Image 1 (cartoon, helix red, strand yellow):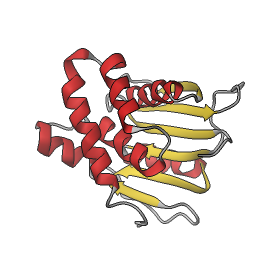
Image 2 (cartoon, rainbow, N blue to C red):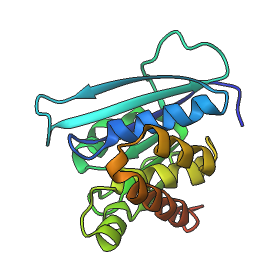
Image 3 (cartoon, rainbow, N blue to C red):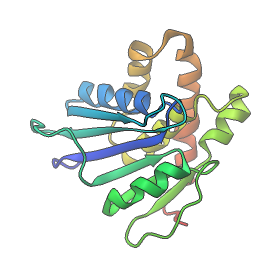
Image 4 (tube, helix red, strand yellow):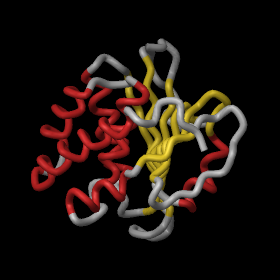
Length: 185
């Protein structure tokens, strides 16, 4: 694990749960000894407008919580992909929801399609937990936080009505990441 600051952006449309995914990652990382800071931005609409959550992780104090270049971009809509893929640093990684995003080739940036919405629809009958599927895939691919720490965070910090489905969605994402290593468009 790197000692340098690691920046992650979760991006999508309002209502896709990117802010929730970012908050859960930050809380889990804090439990594992990371300093975590975050910021969020919503479009002019609460639902349907673009939204993102930035999470900065470091072993040192974080004095500027805003992202300038992403080490990881977790993106759930085409609009957000088109807007934010350019902020990924060379050598960074893009995880995109393969149901909503058609990627473009970007030099020196590996990209991985995650069947997040499709898997959530198949398992739960709707795509509501796709954000947590993406969080599980990120955790498995990056190694930033442990799976049990994420589970504990979902139990403590998550909406009580969705704890069981979110735990199942996390496991789906972790499983999907196994097939992603080394895959690029």
